[in-house]
Image (cartoon, rainbow, N blue to C red):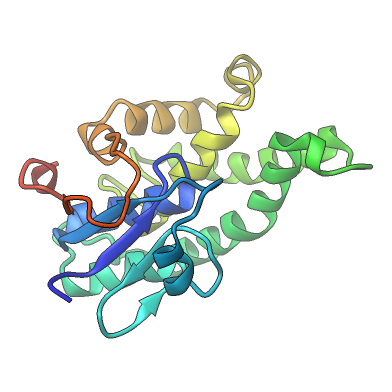
Length: 216
């Protein structure tokens, strides 16, 4: 295989964070956009869980977004995203566990019967309040530059906020709101959110990141 293949879906927060790490590290892949309601056979044959993102390196298949981030950054980490305190890994675990569970129940209310939406939203806000406390001391979670925790968590905070933006901005989370706004307005975010046509067999390869994106 000429280069690794990344199966992705533009709006999926897990796929977003994988693309963020690939972009900053400059690890070029062939990006294949998946339509989740019509998953290609080639994707289903590659991904053990049939979920995005999925990275086929040619040597192994990496089916977890955080593992894809680590794969890319361990090869090249110009922003030193991996240089963060142990608390950063704890925050990612909390994001991927209790926060994501509460987010799903809050966002996809019709899928979860007999769930107290207010309680789930409160659980999520407890985590955001913890982040807000950290962000009160610096531009990013652990200082003046972004790290793995920032980029692994921000796509999910964005998803939570967009369930009800008016409600979100009314919450006493000024530092989280500022952090999220800076992320959404960044060139890095705009670049990884470019739209690509769904992959089909025989379609021209889409290289990611391109030279412009590697500079963001």
